[in-house]
Length: 203
Image 1 (cartoon, rainbow, N blue to C red):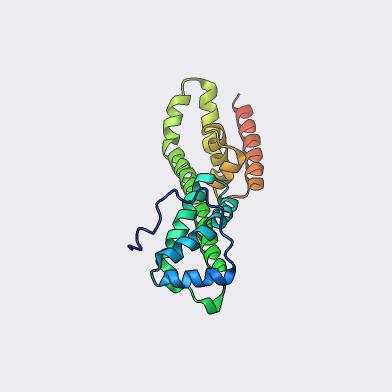
Image 2: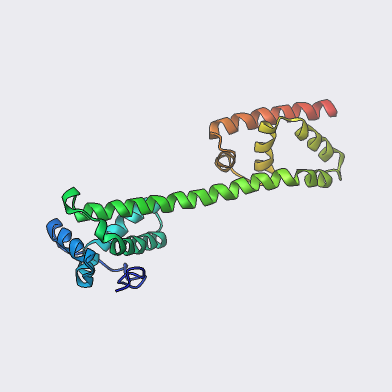
């Protein structure tokens, strides 16, 4: 069998309730699977897939992603079964360690994607700041607001722009700027006060 494709079709994870094979039996099945025994792997799959799915779901908190993680893990087990060393631990532990690592990687990947999107929003806001100026010049009050914003230090201006122009929450602003939420709230309060003082002086 081609180990690159895996011995089972994607989607077969659902419905598996796990077998009653004890740990010693699982160890033997994994050793046999390492030798290319497809029947042994099928039994190992039936015994552990549901447990892997449960662990993955507890980490990623999403059913569809947990199923994808489970499929990936079981394919990885089939491909790398030869790396398993019975003397170093039970097969169940070895498989669940792979599952936990893969699930954590999935969570980190999703979080990294979210962070990239927020950083892109910050950069785009910086690039479009001059364009915002052209729009707010329509009314005198808006021109004053913009002028006062530009006079703020960047660390005070950016949280206000992201919150009031981009509609981000405190938490999203904090994540976008890689700064604690408490610090962001403090900077926004300080920025709003300075903005108010500036506008009062201009009126």
